[in-house]
Image (cartoon, rainbow, N blue to C red; front, side, top):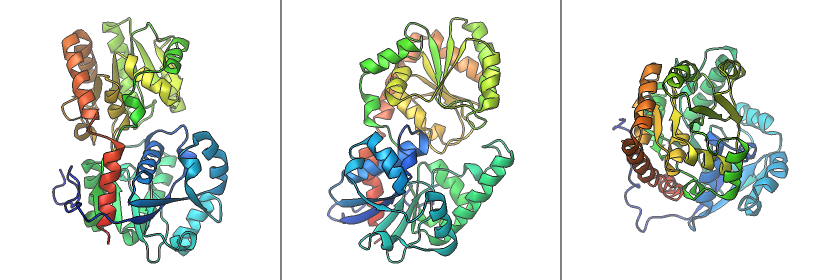
Length: 397
């Protein structure tokens, strides 16, 4: 645990009573990522919406005009009701200008802004406003979080340049776990005193019962009456696809009745390997939230053996749907799951097979995990996360 970092506790910042400030908050949001979103896109959407609900924040959105025309009709309220300021160029070109020229500054878009808040890893120059940025993790700086190919090297260079710029410029960094705070401070010690931890949370609809469209999805996918294990992260190196595809045949020997349902996009290499293992693996691709909620709820358990996570949003979403969870004992996952999941080594397929078989073999154990998971997930609400982040914004003044 990173005990030396200020703002890394689980409680609200002290001194909030009577000290809340009314803030003009300009949120820079990549709108293209908030519809049909997973991971960082889902976080940006939920955090922005819940900050906007607060009476002590006047929130405006800085965005790409083309993205606004395309995406806002798809997401509707509250995004259709926000006050917008638009970039002068397409997103990539605008970000290059900001990075290279430090122009135009945030105040050009909204002169009254107190804080420019980048809801994901981005840089926007400011003059008098404070700059706060969400950094989800340090994955592209780590040795083994990603497959080390040409794409990785490009992304690593991009991240190093961006993080270096932010380290010199930002007034505050929000990150999503103590693990991420530790790793970011390891690579950039100069930002340690500016790091603040606010955990991600669960969108409210994951706590609600499965609705008819979700039931219909299960029927159309052929999973209504079929026992299945759900992998919600797709097949990728970082999500430990190698372990999944090595462990699955071993598990099928023990549990030939099981199907493995894999949600989200998959790397083509792993997708082809999965198909070569036969019809016991269903590659479902991206699914909307009503279908994902139904899958979480109907699964025998949810399996998330990721190599590296800054937070691990699927495990909390699964717990909110009363799913038993098997995950890796690595990166942020022990911090997020607490005592409410069964954890196994990300390098040992047999450990995962044993953990899954133990849950499937012992109904009381599985029921206990489900109950503990539901209770654990209830602690992660976007209302609380937005309140805590607002408290840290206040401390900038």
